[in-house]
Image (cartoon, rainbow, N blue to C red; front, side, top):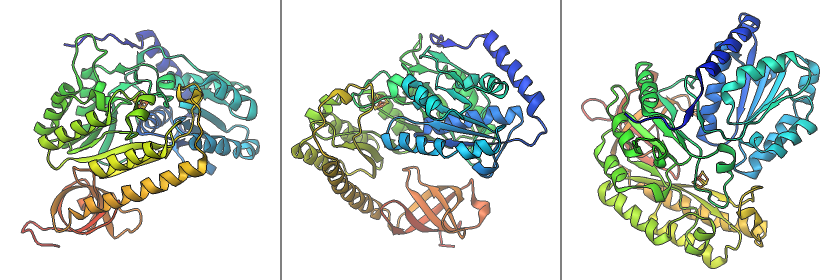
Length: 476
Ligand code: SF4
């Protein structure tokens, strides 16, 4: 079996955590106290918030219907993009009167932004009514810090440097449904020049496969049908474990878990997309035929400045290989426009590769410098207006191709795992194909959690619409 090379939390720390949870239970249980968590950023953060909610539920807090009725408000922050950071400052600042109206309320700020000492200090100084500040590496110590905050009239602040710990057995309160996030590794070693993640999430640390598989088996027993394996650089999983089990081998093991019917994973780095992983995706029936493979830019000059460690040619070759082995695979990507030094010619190469690959969807962003990264020191001569103009051109192209790709589904019958009632029309249900296409259709609520076959009747840029087929293959 693989040995653990990463440091797990010690028995003493687990005992300490239990002690504080019990202390808090004595104070909180039965008091009807409520919490509200505001989450910014990626799925890793969403899942971290599920852990915070899990700890709060264990202590005896209930989820509030709104921020206004909460006794504890937590902001789980993200520092990957500037606009998310700005929103955090605005939203925390807006709680001043809320706190003054009832000083017993607890306001906490945690997550990636707090991992940067200067940001944590700024929050402490600018918003002195904030009770609790902590980073990403000590999420599991939340009960201890909360108890300190309840007993103190000063801001409790604890930011740890990356210490390589992999913390297991933190309670999780997942969103209701059939899909669950499962973190398989933390951190990233890649140091893409624009990215803050390696600085705030630390180096790559993989969870032990037994812990991952144990969690997925218990999710299956709880009725979850789909798992999404998470990691900032998920396909590099296992390289830090002493006896290597690599990502494709982990996928094969997850594929064997009874009750789990679909497996997704994100985010993959092109340089770690091995032949073995492609073959595993092709051969494992539960692994969805979709991959999110960030390209970021189409110009080799810019890719080099971004420290992405692949070229446009090697990326195209990789996509060809994926499509050869998994012909109907759907591809999504991330693209940054306006990186320092990006010329019109560089940008046109990004447009060109988008035309050539024909992505099913793309998350597109205007470059904004992140303090402490290598790119933040590069000369950024492109004006915001030009960046926005490039983004608009790119978005138009992405939407056009997405719609064309979706039109290929017209009149086709697709298997859909039904997820929920549509948010915009209660008469509709919503689910996804294994290629990650969102499908809306009329149907009875008892179909939620089941697989149905849907005949696609309408294709839009970002979703499909169709009719459920009955057992005889007729539209119902
Ligand atoms: S691979 Fe690059 S962009 Fe992705 S998290 Fe790591 S450093 Fe950031």
